[in-house]
Image (cartoon, rainbow, N blue to C red; front, top):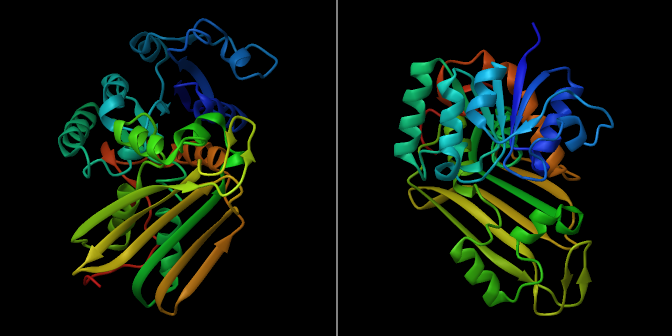
Length: 333
């Protein structure tokens, strides 16, 4: 039987998710979005497929979910769980599973413990499974180093560095890291939530720790602007000397005052594309890539997780419930 899928959110990421799902043979039976430029149009036209799919993009989520009877909802509308939980509740209400790109849903107990308990109980009662995933959190900063750690007999520290050239990314990404702002504008916009830079540092740290069995004493995060020393120009922004050309941020996990997990992101115009995972222990291992394209990888992660979510237990789950191939710590390091 072909799995029936509803696309909840047809923005840049939802657009990619829909195309990947169609290419992989899933039966896309509904599409939800509130953008008036998309509502009422055929999904095939919105995706630029050059053909109609017979599926209209609609803004009435309850109607779409009830009429289409999906097996799973692929959700990509926001980064903060408290802003999107009502959308996820709608899907649970009709008994469908949910795979969401919402970064803070990857480990929601950190910021939203009450909402996490609410969603977990509601999903269990309705026989639905809910998972937050993506490329970060969901792969580079957590799942990837967890799997690589299986080759160590002793693990002392994990460091993950991701560097990416922001000029190659979409407009909304360049905007959210504050390109072209002054340093003070960046700080103010970040504090007011007008830009987010990266969301999910603590979630990745806690998710990684949970997979390998570490009990952290505390978690911290921080982000700051990278300032241009010369002129830069992207497809969307011009950046002059003294203006923001990107962002650098980190998340850290500590045991007994010692940093045992550190994840770092450096996203700027002209930055080198790479990821590096450093595992300190016995033996020590360093793994390095030439960079993972974030948007396509997010779509791939979401679609590839569909079969695993469909076979998982009901309730709110994390990648810890799906990854059983990693270093296993029985005593805190």
